[in-house]
Image (cartoon, rainbow, N blue to C red; front, side, top):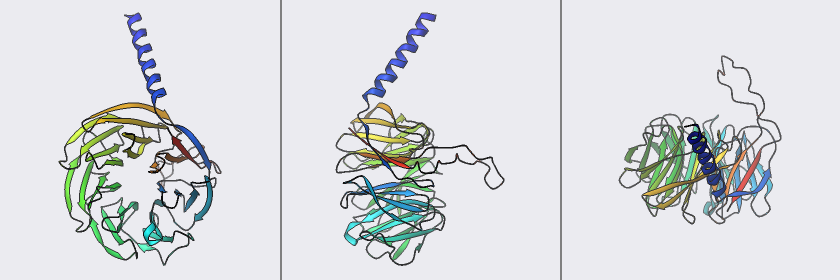
Amino acid sequence: MKKLLIFALFACSRGAAQAQQSTPYHLLNTITIGGEGGWDYLTVDPAGERLYVSHGTQVEVVDLKTRKLIGTIPNTPGVHGIEVVPGAGRGYITCGRSNTCVVFDLKTLKPIGAPIPTGPKPDALFYDAFSKRVFLFSNDGGKSTVLDAATGAVLGTAELGGDVEAPATDGRGTLFVNLEDKGEVIAFDAQTLAVKKRSSLAPGEEPTGLGYDPKASRLFSACANEKLVVTDSQTGKQVAVLPIGKGADGAVFDPITGNVITSNGASGTFTVIHQDSPTKYRVVGNMPTARGARTLTLDPKTHHLFTCTADYGPTPAPTAENPRPRPSIVPGTFRVLEYGR
């Protein structure tokens, strides 16, 4: 029995090592940003060849031709998401602490007008080219503000019935979002704002990152309990449930490689899952990134992956105002990590 146990442990460790080595991505560049503060989403603008990175109370702008920091958009308290509308020459930023959206000029990076009031805790946002609207998704109660992408005018409020995370689109007028508190992925109409379908993600819990394959009509929801749930976006039926790393907050699908990637901040890994067919998925492996690298974005031109993190210091003592404090962040260590095949 002891020999069998030793052999089994060896086989498992060998299999894990092989999976780790077989992941098709490696670190290409480390882009040092520095400064202080936390982070959330980062967004590639392929037309402008820029990377926008949320960072505390500002947005960092990186030139993807040189991998250099070329500007900063300040006064974005509690920044979460950034979205650009190249045809309108403007970008949009959600500010969770002030319940506002900051609009900025893509050329000058200067603000356009006053911040726009939003629903509570604006988090993710999305520019839908089909409807020519920008959706500012609330992570508290589901009241999501909808803007005219060209002017920033408020067009209405989408009542989505939950705390929204991570949008996607079919490109034909239907948007998809995870509802973190309900454990659901929903579809709604970008024009009427009516919810069209609700699909449970159980056994997945607290979904955040969302990837989408429009060709196969597959949604990929990264859940807090270390599960990726694959859903048929047309029928709402589950297709597969796969294991991922801990602390996932991002998920993307690359149609060129057929890979689904989740960024797992607590594990400090990417989980790479290959779509062998629309009904068959397999975990390729878990590749090391860095602790705290929990969000990611995909450059559709180069198919490179970008995530960000910093070094951690001691965790402050709990207080009545902050009973579960996060670890401190070492000043000057904030950085972007770029991965490719």
